[in-house]
Length: 294
Image (cartoon, rainbow, N blue to C red; front, side):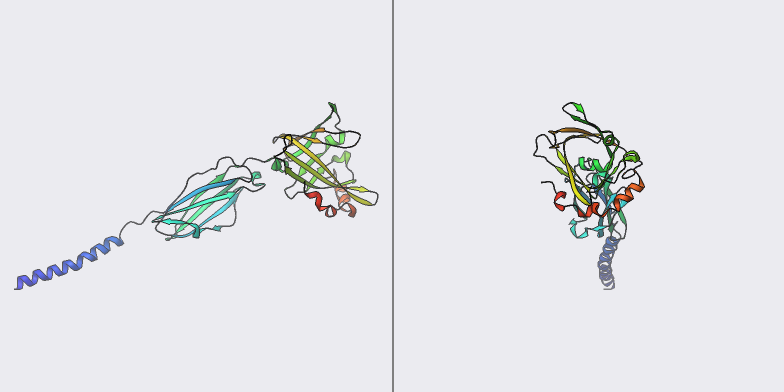
């Protein structure tokens, strides 16, 4: 009887030990190594208004946080938390990213950094470079511009002062003209530039409107000129200026770009200050309707 009792006891102990061993093995299983990947590291060449898209895949036992940063000229912006948008399947998480390229994004290096923090507080990252083509509108801002030729009926009609002027366009819709000291004056206040693409026009790809205030006696008068752009590259644009005076229709102007360098609005500091201190030339009084090209 004693032998049977000992055998029964051994079976009982063995039955109790097996679950403990199995539980111990489960606890000692190797955790999933956290990893993050992206289906592309650089987008195809995109234009302003088009979408940058990518799929990010995360493998982890658990995700505590997932966010991304817009990176402009290698400077990270504010974090965007998209943890709630992760799609989970077992230990795999995916996120479909999309971003619409904004106006003037093409003036900078642009990218996005994606960052995951797992349930062990390990941080992993991956990145996407957004390759953007320079738009015609952004070309105006990227460079300074000069009128290098004006033709009418095959004749050279480029005035010396127009050839001397340097135009500088700003992202906020304002522009300045360095008239050089030789031609500096306070007759005009250069105010705004307006750009409109014209995809449905057979011979014109865009219209550039330059708005300025003209001093006329004791008054300030709004003036604007519309230039019809027929061809454009980073280095040169061809645009036509119609002046319904003396039959001077279709003056062909060649705008040529140059790297931004020394620049003095109105030609001299004194002249720039003089223009700024003439109330009737204030750009704040420009008719707002002129800021929209029909």
